[in-house]
Structure formats: C-alpha cells, structure tokens
Image 1 (cartoon, each protein chain N blue to C red):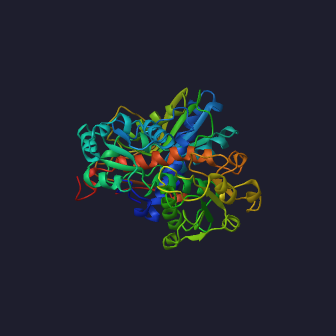
Image 2: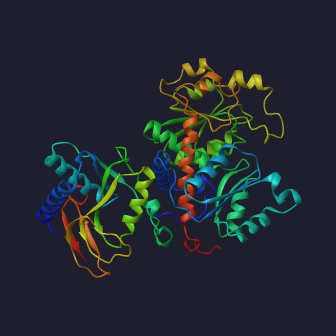
Image 3: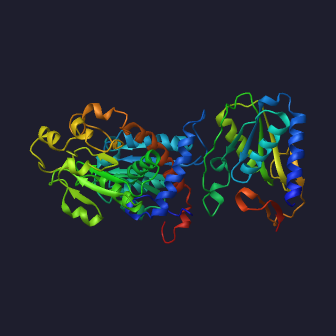
Length: 169
Length: 314
C-alpha cells in the first residue's frame, strides 16, 4: 500500500465508523502502542472533519498484559497509557496497524477494562494479515493482505518513519 | 536498551543507560497507580519473598505493594518470625526459599554484602533493599526519579546530601546514581560522619551547612543512624540540630526553588525543622509515591529476566 491507498483506506474507515456509530459523541479512539498511535490520531482528525465535533483519542500501552513477556528474548519496553477521557459508557474504537494472531487485541481489551467499563469496544486495523490464534475479528479493515506466517508486514507512517507505506517482506 | 540483570544489588554496578531505563519504565508504572484498577498482570504467577532481617516499614510495604500491583504473590519474612532466631544461616534460609520456588527475593540485612552473597549463590532474582551501610539502590533510583520529574533533569544540578553520610547506604547509592547522571554532589555534616575519603567518589565535602546548601537545587537530608554508630559521633542531638539541622533561617537563604528531600523516617526537630518537612518545597511524601513506581520497574525488569540470560550462574 502506498500513501494514497493508506489515505483512502483511513477515509473509508472513518466513514464506516460514523455510519455504524449510534451516538457519535460517545465515540473515543484508542491507538495501541506503538503502531496504532499515529493511525488513531489520523482517524480522529478525519472523524472530526466529518462530524464537526472533536473525537477524543488516547494511547494504550499493552506491554503488561501481553501473554508472551516470558517467551521473548528481549524484554519489551513499557510506555505510558494516556486516556484523556472517562472510559465508562464510551464507544471505544481500538486502532492498531496490523491484526495478526489477535493476542495484542486480547491484551488491549484487558487493559481497557483496567480503566473502567466501556459500553462497547470495536477494532479498527489498517491491515488484516490473517493467522488468528484467538476468536477475534476486526470491525473496520483498511486492507486484507494474505500472508504466510513467516512473512513480516511493515507499516510505516510519516510521523515516525518519514513515509506512508505498507510492505510485506 | 535490553535489560539483562536478574539482580539489583548496587547502584555502583549500573550504567547510566540502565539507570535511565529504570526511570523511564517507572514513569509507565506511575501511570498504572492512577488507574481505576491499579494492577497489571506482568508478574502473575511469580512469588516474591520479602526477607527483612532488619526492621523497615516504608521499604517493605513499598516492595509488597509494588509486587501486588504486578500481580505477584508475596510472602513477608522478618527476623523475629524466621528460623534465623533458631540459628539458621542466611544462606540456608535463602536456599529453602528457593526450594519453595520463590522467583524474587527482596533482602534487607544489617550486614553489608548480604544481598551480593545471596545473588551469587541463588538462581532466583535478588533485589537489595538495603544492606548495612553499603547500598540501597531502589532508594537512590526513586530519589533520582523524583529529581528528574520535579526539575526536568538531573544533569548539571547541585545536589547536597546533608547528615550522617558515613553510616548511610542511601548516601552511597545516591552518590553513584547522581554522579552517573551528571549531577554535582556535595556532602555535608559533622566531620566525624562525613570523612574526606568521599571526595574519591567525585563529591565535594563541606563542613559548613550554609555554604553547602547555598547553591543547591536539591537538599537531601539524612537521618542519624544511631543503630549503626558504635560510638558517639557528636556531643548531643541538640548540638547537631543547632549546627547541622535544616532550620527555617538556613532554608530561607537557599535558592528560591531549592527542593527538600528525605528518605524517611524523619526525626522532626533534629535534621529538619518540623514546619519545613510539611512545606510545599518538601517532596518527602512524593518520594514515597515514586518509590512504588520505581520498585515496580525494578521488580518487572529483574523478575522478567530468564535465569538462562545470565550465563554462568544458577
């Protein structure tokens, strides 16, 4: 995916979110550290443009809820979670770059409930690459990219990498 | 950076990069303490033993709470209820704890080197919570965390440590951490408690309190460690308070943004004027809060390292 394709996918996802949200004032985005942070902010901008009111956007760090801390050779670095809104009764949309095993999403859902009880949690991902290991499905998908398990999907964003692109290696 | 230490024994062992990594991770854990559910499952299923052979309230409670917030199970052992009173050696006590599949041992002991002694003999993680007059690394890390958070940096700041330096493990650990982070450290107190030999650790030694705190950004006060002093090091508590105590008059002549720290327990009216301990430039209670975050970081980092990651041990 190039810059144009990513931009179009995010625009479509924003419209889908609006279409399916009941009370749009209840919607709040949460970007998953680290890949979902910038994508969450961009979706929030697009939603604001469509709805005419700001949509709060936070950051969720799932390091402590991962189930593979002990299996990793390198200990993951924990970042801060930042939720600039009360989570109770909110319609939360989790934003991540790539949906793969589903384990990050499971960890993110556990993390969210540490902050309170939202009305609903949905999942938006730029890329769904398959190979799920848990019963998890995305509500909004930028692009389905069939991959083999050995391949790596890299999502690069301008804010961090200087370029917008999705590459399968 | 990649954390590879299973033990945290001495600030002296840590690199600047390692110190900053712990402080960065502590910032994450401080945020966890502000959540509705103040608990994360990072150390779920692990067992932590608080082996406190010397009395402590603050540090033991802090480690216990930190472990609970990481979802570890905690057992507290104090000298009076342990088999040490029946003549068991420290090594045997620790070996027994390891045989019960403890994962982390936090040790406080009156003898310097006790933590290193265990770390060299056990496969489990060992965290030093104070060994004699040697080191108390988590206290120094939480002090550095507090300075960094309040002042925005540590490098280039003037930090004066005032009081009983000779018998203080907090002072030694602080000197290592602060000098590695680039602060200028001044030590002050009675000459019997602040020997010149500390200049070899890169500190300024000063026997005049006014002079020592004149340009200080941070004043870290230490309690007189009566329990460690084998002889009288100064004539009387009253004389100490009048010559070396931080009084309102002395504090009024410091930098307007100078900050007061104290590792606790404080002796009001001795090393610090009672009103100063509660004033808005005192961060003594915030140090306690930060201690929890720093200890969570230390437990998470050391407790998550696989024993195999450190070659040649176990």
